[in-house]
Structure formats: structure tokens, C-alpha cells
Image (cartoon, rainbow over all chains, first blue to last red; front, side, top):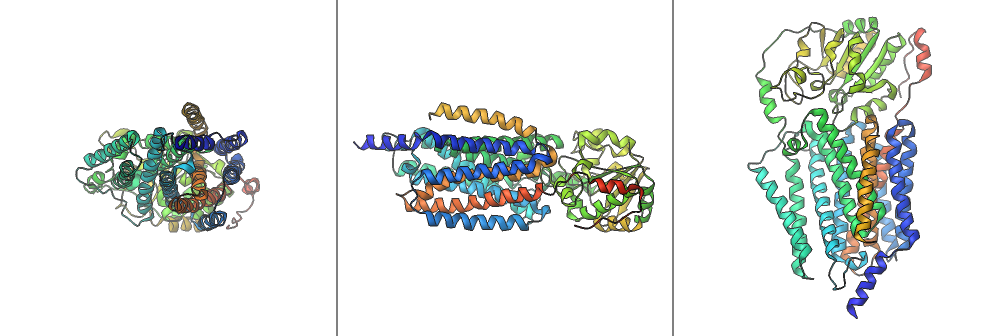
Length: 482
Length: 109
């Protein structure tokens, strides 16, 4: 009778009450609406509330439909975790958003691993035991996938966090023979998953394989991210975002839970699309980013450049010419965020607008350390979002602009991306700031170059005035002179 | 539910995700990441099942840790998204109307 009992257990766990299935479906639909709301800033806050409602439904449904043997502990875990998350969310600086997102990804990854291990240790509770008392083969594959992707997400995100947070150098770390090591580890994970899936051994035999694939997945997450340089971090965060989704989806398959599957698919596609957008904006293939090493070779090439004459100006010169302008396009880059110049910049924009100058902001998709990072920083500085434009929407307007005001950006305005086939950034879409009547370029000194380490012809154009100073100080000085 | 039904839901949801995410305005890509992070913490459902179940104390404790981790993400993710979204403001009409008057310094937030 042993086998029949177990199959009843399995059936009972999966043959859920239709209302419960509907509740999870509703949660999934609310998550879709949460993302849909982000199509415009006007609807986005409502969308976020849909997301919260969906999560509440999912949690409450789970709690009321399962026999809870340990409610106080669960409530304690939610209160402690929720409290920590809440405090972090209130306190975090907007410039630190990439690190925060990386840290959050690592938590999702670790949670997925823990759930998979818990399912492995107590399969009966998850309703994944088959007739023979073993975990069902399909569940074993799903569990192994969930655990492996979760582990890669975890260790990869920890490295991404350390690089973004400055705990670790942003420079690529290249192990000798890393492609062979990575490929070998990947093959080992797949082999262990396959062997685990077809194993007939209920006890220690198959268990060994599960732990082995988990360990290998932790290692490969680490190995995959260490050779990737700082400039490629937007792609890495997007990719890890995607992985965290696939991990949730795999666990959703194990639990036959619609909310988890729908969410996993949404998050997985979202991260994949963002990775694609980032790669396209740098004209790099996803594979070349993952292979890593970008920024290492280029830095060497950058050292050998010649000295060429350029024009330097003062804050007073810049302020005078900005006042005379009819149209100013500001091109901010990550340097603006590092210098914390966004508030001063907005003040400058306000003063110019008060004098009748048209001010617009132009954002490159890879400006900043994560997709959309620059938009958030400008929004924080209270720049209205309808003055902020994307690359394709504003690039043609430089021809009508009196001043292109480049602050903390470099590679995204480098014409070499269009003209120099040998340049590491060749093919990357860039702003045509050279079409503007004048270009003001704020830069700390003539020494450093962008992440890609390439010289920029814009520095030496006739209409360019270099404003060599700390970005924040320079903008503040311009504001004083206006 | 059998595997094929689940797979169907998954594949269709991938298509929904594809079209919904392409319609997200690039200006909101950072909030998009924060909110996808928050919703992917729906993994808490699995964590709750593990934490609630009797039978394996180690599975229960792993479940509880997973509940705590996912809760950091749920509360943190939605809160930080809400904080970011609240900062996106449209052009302030009064600022524009001041264009021909004397330059009034903007209030610092």
C-alpha cells in the first residue's frame, strides 16, 4: 500500500482547489499589469501597486491553503526580512542603485537554491514524490535547473555587487584557460543534471549528484562574472536579472504554481531584453560580453595617444555663451553621477530656462551603470521627465542646437564609433554632438579617457571648449555666473 | 496540472513578457529592474511551503531562511521602486510661466 499512499500525496498536492489556482493566476496577471504600468511614468505608480497586490495574494493564498506547523517562525522571518528590506530601500542613495539591484538579485538566487534544497530534503511537502517513492523525474530536472540557475544568479550577483560597490576592482580578472574551465564546468553541470534525472537510486547515489551540480553552479557563476569589466556591468546586471527570473520559473514548474511560472517568464524576458538593448547600444554581441575582458586591452591602446591642441575655457565663458544660446542639449554620463553634479545641473537648467533658453537632456542607453540609471538620477534631481530624451529621439536635433553640453560622458559622443574601424567602440551608436554650433565638454583633466580607453576627436574640434574641472564644481561655478 | 499545461502557460507568459517589456519606456528601465526583482521574489511561495511543512526540520529551517531572504526583496524591491517612481515628475507649468520674469532661484528639494 506504500506506493498508493505516496501517489495520493502527490495527487493531493497538485490537484489544487480551483479557487487556489485562480488566486495564483490573479497574482500572475497583476504582475503583468505591474510591468505594463511602466510603459509611462504617469501609470507606473499604479502598476507598482498592482505588483504589491499580486504578491500579497500569492503569499496569503499559500499561507491559508497549507497546514502551517510554524506560523510564529514564518511571521518572524517575514518581519525581520521585510524590515531589513524596507530600511535599505528608504536609505539607499540613487547612485548606488546598481549595487542594490545586484544584491537583491543575489538574494533571489539564494532563496531559489534554498527552496530547491528544501524540496530535495522534503519532497513529500512539495508533492513531487512519484509512485516508487522517488522524486519524479520531471521534478528532478526542474529542481536541478532551479537550484543551478539560482546558484549561478547568487554567486554571479555577489561578484557583480562587489565590483559595482568597489569592494573589488572593476578591471577584468582573466584566468588562464578560462574558456576551457567555464565550458568544462558547464558540461559537468549538465551531465550531473542528466545523471541525477535518470538515477534510480532513492538514497545517497542521486543525492550526491544534486549536491555536485549545485556546487559546480556556484563556481561557474563566480567564474562567469570575474572576467567582465566595469563598462559591461549594465549587461551583467540585466543578464542576472534574467537568470533570477528563470530560477523562479523552474521552481514554479516544480510546484505547479502559475504565479511563479508567469513571473519567472516575465522577469526572464525582461532581463533578456534589457541585455539585448544594452549590447545593441554598445554594438557588442552578447557572447563577446560574456567572454569578458573588455576594457583591459583598450586601456593599453589609450596610453599611446599623441598630444593634440585643444581649447580650454572657464565657467564664466561657458555661462556667457549658454545665456546667448537658444537651444542647449545636455549629454550626461556616469561621470556626472560620480561627481554628484545632477542637482547643480538641474539648477543650471532652471536658470537657463528662466532666461528663455530651451534645455533638453539626451541619454544614451548605456549611460550609467545599469539600464535607465541616468534617468533616475535626473528624476531625483527633479528634472522633468518630458525634458529627457533617448538617443534616437534627439540625435537629429544636435544640428539645431547652439550648445551641446557634455558632462561626465565620453565614449557615447565619440565620433570614432562612426569613422574609425579599428576603434574598440566602432559601430556603437553615438550622439552627433559635432553637429551643434558649440560643444562644451566637462572633464576632470585631459589625462583620462572613457571606459573604452579611446581618444575622442570631439576634444580637439574648433567649436569645442573643454571645461577642465570637477563636474559638480564647474556646474556650480556656471550657475553662479549666470 | 500536467507538464504540457504548465509548459503552455510558461511559453505564453514568455510572449506576454516579451511584448510588455518592449513597451516599457527606456526612462523607466531602472525601476523595471527593481520591480522585476521584487516580483521574482514570488519564490517566497516555495519558501513558505518548505517552512510550513512538517517532516524535515532541516527543510523547514532552510525554508524559513528563504522566506526571510525573499521578504528582504519583496519589501525592499517594491519600496525602492515606489521611491524611484515618485521622483518622475512632468514639466512644472509655473516654472515655464516665469520665463519672462526675473530669474527666481528654484527651491532646493
